[in-house]
Length: 242
Ligand SMILES: Nc1ncnc2c1ncn2[C@@H]1O[C@H](COP(=O)(O)OP(=O)(O)OP(=O)(O)O)[C@@H](O)[C@H]1O
Image (cartoon, rainbow, N blue to C red; front, top):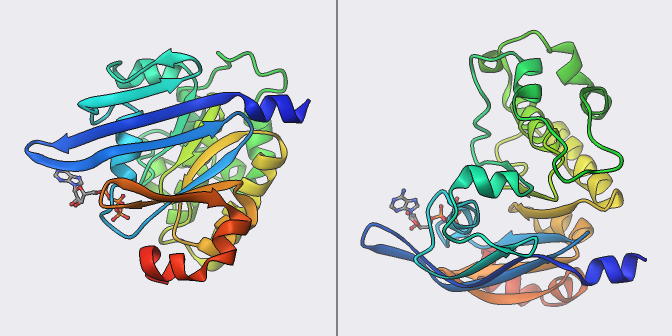
């Protein structure tokens, strides 16, 4: 049943504090993603969204608090172990492998550890983003920004993640490509994929995300559903500068 599936917490971040050297960026930040949910993380530049993702992934370890993923405590695990538990990351700046071909980028970390009954395959990724099939033999470095983002999403999906995280899903992309990425996210939500997404487009986020967290100076200052976010335009003005 969708109801009982929605009730299961996949990711639970509770009271994390994260620093870069002596500079503390997160001050007791908490959030949750339930199975099958699409959750948005919003906030103005520099408020700690990327640092939250880096903390979850173990790239910049949180010094306190708890992070549980799929029932396991992951706060002090190395990044590769956290990824293997089933988190697919589409990082800020995409970070595709520039000296591998598009095809090699897609298959480099592919797998189905979670035992997804309808796993992503290269053919399905090509059907989702036909441009990646056309450019299969091209080196990553030759791709446009939009193609790189499609590749980064395709690469993350090829790991068949329990949770897909996108940091700046559509930042810096041309309008048509942005639309393609939003359509892709809608389709993923329809498939029941759990997603944590950072983006600045509140209109699109409130169209497809189930819940939202607004971060201000390393703390969660608001959380609610899309309906609640739309009903409070003042919030967008106060915390998002819109
Ligand atoms: N490697 C780093 N070393 C020191 N400070 C950092 C580092 N990375 C980020 N910061 C600082 O941490 C704070 C939060 O940055 P973060 O990138 O998490 O914000 P953000 O909300 O993702 O913003 P943006 O939308 O600009 O990406 C900022 O003040 C930033 O300058």
